[in-house]
Amino acid sequence: MTDPAPPSPPADPAPEVTLRGGSLGWRPVAPQLATVRLLVLAAVLVLPLLATVLVALLVTGWVWLGTAALLVVSLWSAWVIRRQVSAISWVELDEEIVIRKGRLFRSLVSVPYGRLQYVDIQSGPLARGFGIASCEIHTASPESGGSLPGLPTAEAEALRARLAARGEAQRAGL
Image (cartoon, rainbow, N blue to C red; front, side, top):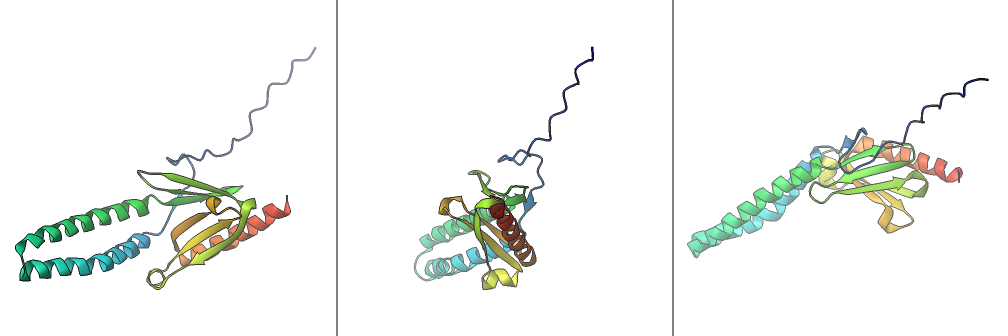
């Protein structure tokens, strides 16, 4: 009588995708995204800040409180922008692309390649000046797509090509 064969080791489990990261090779977005967002913040706040300083100098000193409040809001917004940008990351897996965002309110978007309809790349004049673009992933359902801001332009174009090829291959295999 022969001994039964020992059980075979389990197959490698699929990588675990979690909000905290896990062991996957998460890729961050370009740090230039923070610079672009900070420049937009400065452009939005410079006129109100100048207006409060002017009114404080010409009309009443009480408006310095408004100036101080605007400065506090500006500093807090700059801190939030830096934290938000550093929390955006993504990873390409065998069957899907996963995008992770947020520190306090975290979100994890997983888009299977077979559900992709098209991938859109956008880059405004300020983003182009810093060499970055946004990659928008569209599926049949508007709620199931994802966006990946702040990729270097060459990487965004390469990602679009890879996603389109994988989506086509997945749909052909259905």
